[in-house]
Image (tube, rainbow, N blue to C red; front, side, top):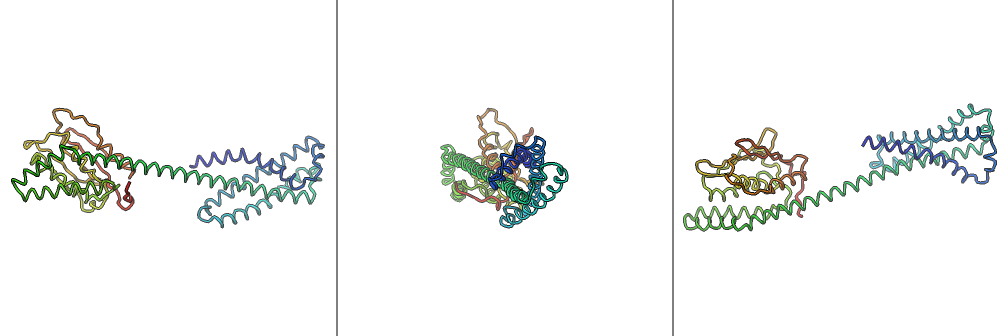
Length: 369
């Protein structure tokens, strides 16, 4: 931002000083078109060059002073916060400063050019015209500078709006992907067959256990239907869902899998994207062996920095299951839109873990896409 401002000031001077120099003579002609301009070039080259240097020097000083006034007022009196006050203050200071500046500059130049025809040409009417033209030029410089300020603000607003629209579009795409993934799991014949087969067997063997199984199964489906469109949900709700989901797995796999939840109470009201824990639990079970002699351990805990850690014992399958890492990519993408911090995956010889930054629920409103 600072470099952009410096570049603007540099190019502003290159453009505005010649423009002000030309504008000085155009405005002078418009104010007094009946002046004998044909006599203008009948003077000596030295006198014409001296006048041009005189006018160019004044245009340069006028430009620098106008820029200085605008920069100082930018720090004290913002156009955005106090537009009317800034307008009145800036233009009042601009006019007063221009009058004083021209008065001092004329006297200084008259002393330097006392022996030339320029000094005799500066009669009372010419001086008044010079003051009028200088004030108009000063206002013009200020208007150009102010116009650029509002143009930059407008351009920044457009870019910000475009970024927000792009972010909203990404949210929609990722949410739809997550929703599709959730629906696929719900409609997965194996998932449905396994759960209904388990439920059918439990009804014959233990109706009380079958009732608990059915309650957790309905809780899992209800959670995915209700919360899949939300951007963020509390850790407490997500862990309740994860326990219900793991209960279904536990009934089928028994002591082959174990899950432990050990997090601080104060972290339960922090936020996390929904379905995150389910994806990580499913990922752990899908890619690791689990037996009674060597059960798969899943641990949900936190570190000292308040991050959620989901880890599992690493015991790879003897055969490879093709993996697109869709679950991890989806989690990373959703975090990328919600926070500057993203999940970190760590793999050691014995453990696979994912660190999830916890978010503030109040900052991110839930939206339906």
